Amino acid sequence: MRLVAATHNPGKAREIAALLDGNYEIVTAADAGVPEPDETETTFVGNALLKARHAADRCGIVSLADDSGLSVAALDGAPGIFSARWAGPGKDFALAMRKVEQRLEEGGSRDTRAWFTSALAVSWPDGPSVVVEGRVDGHLTFPPRGDRGFGYDPIFIPDGHDQTFGEMDPAIKDAMSHRALAFAKLKAALID
Image (cartoon, rainbow, N blue to C red):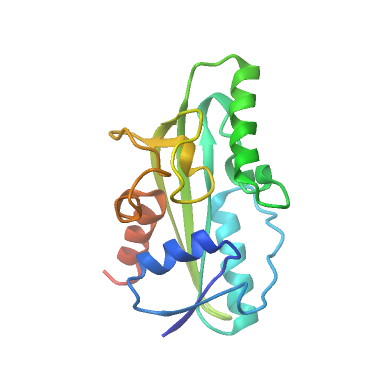
């Protein structure tokens, strides 16, 4: 079965493909020439649904979209749904991680609690949609550590671990990440 992964992020596309265990032929929205929609919703769930419907309607096949990001307790949940935008138009996550560190220093908080959220939406063309959400809690560390993963992974240490997502073997991260938790919920909603 063909499935469009409604993303232009190569790292996210790789994680989605790994979590689907090769059971689907995956085409990314970028490969299909589907432009990214404006993310106008105020939640991860809303934006995931918007992206999934956008890709499904344009490609005419089932679409899977993820909207995810890092939320920092001391920053009142920021960057949250704006996580990618903090990286600027060039998707420079080194810049985004410096911005998080700078905002924490400016606020004078020693609270490094943070969490990753992933909302997954599956949409059928002109049909129904299913949306689920996964979350993994942890804390931040600076300077960034590790060159695996993508985005904010090098500054995030999940609870119960001493390595950042950027240092972890991808298979270990994929088994416990916010996206993996959301995929487990999605599988239960669609199959089980």
